[in-house]
Image 1: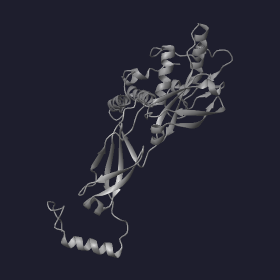
Image 2: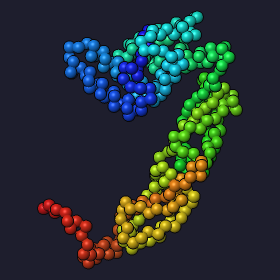
Image 3: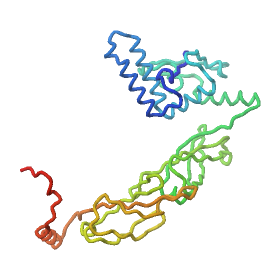
Image 4: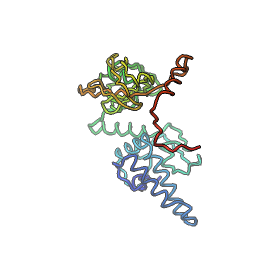
Length: 318
């Protein structure tokens, strides 16, 4: 079986970002598009290779598996690959095909699924485990690690919390109690030693913040949209606003417009190093959904006496 060097196929470096990989994929797909080479079978095969390479490198999880595999065995592009040479020889039989219609190679189907079948439960993680076993015989045994994601609210990240998590390891469900430190940031990876729960190795939790209707994080700054009524915006008012530290009273100046922001220093997000951002109150002028008869009459009166026209310089089509 031929080893596929997907980086070579897409003509990108291993350090290429997802945007660079996507851009290069589009460039090559356009270059070898079948409409430009209707009678060239080599171009059609090239397009299949490009699609297969992008299917792996354009997917963070598949790219990670592929990179780990390549770094573990230091393959060179085009080298034949035989699973039996890497600790799977005795008593293991492997059968792979491309019958799923994807047109991808047996190499792809073996590691990432598809039409491949297997009689012994072989998968790419078995190779990594085999690598660890051989390393231990040579006197070095790298520590096993696992990755997962953990979704928390911004409030939980700001104040710190403890989350109960259930994970499946080898068909067995493990219930973990994970302490989230105060000030953790989204995208941060939290390393937890698994031995406490009978898991050999470390678990890396990538922290995600759940979408919040109240707040939006911009670096360390927090944007909070606050609704005000038309007369409050016109005359000014005092508004009670929720923050991550509790409620505060904010002065809304008269004549403020929708979209304008009021800065409250040092009321933003505080990270694990005690760096603090600012809170920005974004004004959103909201009309009442229903008007009483008296309110409607007041609006009519205002329409009659007001001389302001925001459309004065706009064209009026009749």
